[in-house]
Length: 480
Image (cartoon, helix red, strand yellow):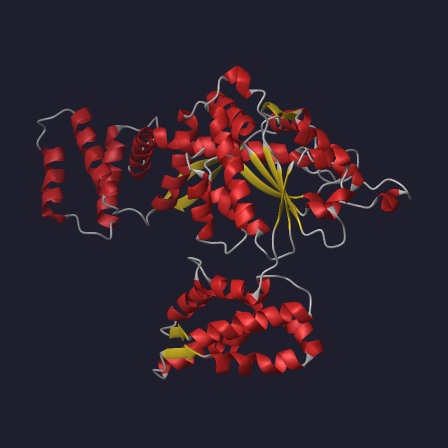
């Protein structure tokens, strides 16, 4: 996990998210506490459990965006899932333990990427050796003379001139008789390798053998993620790998062979062991839409609720700390940090099971966004919507300039639409921007051809584009 201080984490989040300081601070402290715990004595660290967080706020105020940006900041296994897509164990659907398995898969990919960088040079050398052999037409049973003849043919067919010096060298290797066949063949390989490094064969097609892992078939309407891990692993071992011959360019072959050689050099057992440890000690699960599984007590009197109350019962031991069986081994969830979020429009946090509420001791309420917040959202973030729209139209040759009153108008109209209709937060700005630029985006190529390359967006222009929509309440419900 990156050694970022809470202030640095909040500073990074401020570059992309406006407001919601309390949520940013809570998340920053929780992430920093992961690092602090790792500095403690191992025996004492076992007693320090993560303080899970639940973020409460209307839609479009930044809950999911905080999670998305946090995933890029922390060098730790991080997964965002929706609570509403899980069902109780024993019913058709995904059980809650699958989120831990998905987290472990991400950790394996992360560790594999790190180890791939360590063995990169050795893998590249092995790939180059194999590519040279393929370009020379060599196999384990072919002799040097055949490889040399293939090299001569490749020179004749090459679209790049290799110069007279290479031709004279080729004559020398065949006519001088001063060296052995092994020396001659080695010089041919070195020359071919140099041309390969220079990129002379990137578009040439060659044939390679590709080994593909066969997927586990769907049995009884159950996908592989719904099987018991032991059963899934057994089925994978029973299904043999499929090898087929494929004709690809040298550039594509390099990527395929690089993957194969990297897998050969990486210690699989060490990779899995490291990934499991990282998942247990640094893993973070962002549980979005948790309000969708909250239900008042009277809502469950009629019978079992497999997608609400049942999911809460299954989620409780995962959050509390238990051992999850995966295809790679046991994963303990005691130290995994859970960050939950929900709008809670039609339910309350108190509608969750009391035991589950107690597993999220830190509660943060996010404030609804105002017109002032919308103005900042349109101007301040590194990838603000106005900057995105200007960059898109710049590809057509148009230079878009936003006047200050245009920013004010878009922010005010978005706030007005949220007040009159459903409040969808900052997502309303995306709709406003699209309505303002609808005609310009359509006419952009023709405008550039007429040399109309400068576009000024004013407050009057914004209101003209949106006035008719805002006046027609029925139309605004569909357009805005």
